[in-house]
Length: 316
Ligand SMILES: [Zn+2]
Image (cartoon, rainbow, N blue to C red; front, side, top):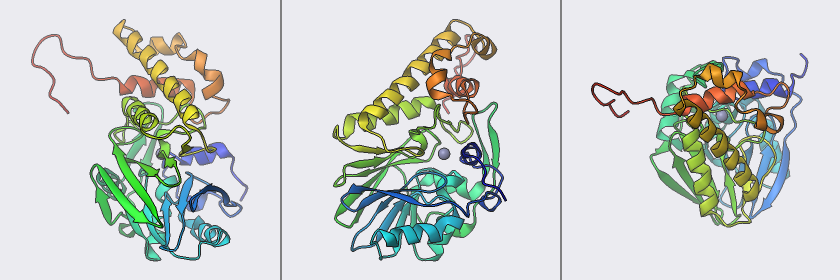
């Protein structure tokens, strides 16, 4: 088996029908970066992992793929974290962030997530942007489901840290958690903030760019300016990086909203290359979410047009 390119793993990042075993993950190495306060970022294949270590045990935010669980444990040991993984917080249901749940839960970890995440893991379904990106997601094994779910916010007190797990509605999906580490001054954003280019927005999974913008704005408003921002994918970022990304989301989605208000169709917007000014920076060649796919995601994030006559549409 050859090593598949990064692009392919990003495609898998949207929770494809392909099980993790069909990727060649045997050569993946886990890279770790210390953020202080016993907190580390672990990067292997899939979403970034935050690992809080200390005398009480380990808490992970996301867990990549099950076949990497032993390597993740070995990496933790290498950091001097010899206590078991006690808690795992899932930022959202996509398999490149949750496929390790079963392996860690079997070894005694308790999985924590938003209510909607549990429902989506249990049922499977379709992940996609409501247009050109669409993947079937299989139901997860019952043993991989979170044992603790929450509705709006939950705090885990561990290793001298307050780990605040906060739900942002309808952002990357409808079950997103952003995780704040107060002592370490760090935030794990899940895939609400990614650095591979235009973000994937799982519209079929209840995501919406307006929710992503609201979440980013709230984080920027809430955290100290020197907070370390852990993206769902890509290198560690600053609050300033998050601000730049949020402005891109705001500007592009405002443009699409204006164009639709002016009566333009999605096809016309594509033909006019409405988002061309952002392509060079956010849609590199072979990008997972190319400019047209991102345009579709923004278009599909707009509220449904109101009827001019007849009864008002029912609230969803
Ligand atoms: Zn995702």
